[in-house]
Image (cartoon, rainbow, N blue to C red; front, side):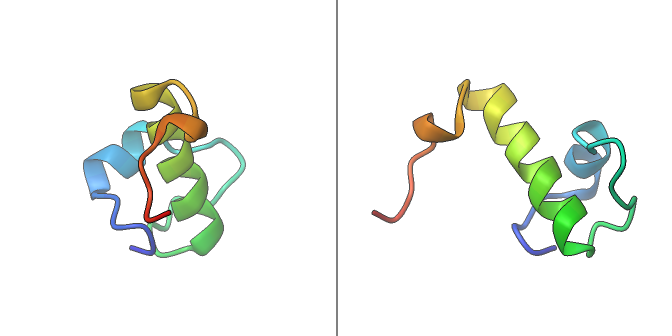
Length: 50
């Protein structure tokens, strides 16, 4: 997938109203963001390249 989310995590953090296709960019990104927000509290707390 786009953000390298694995299928079980994608299914667990799927955002209602988006496609169930893990390769759909919108569904992939929103599920990944939902996971990061749940795991780290906020997207601001996620380490990144900058």
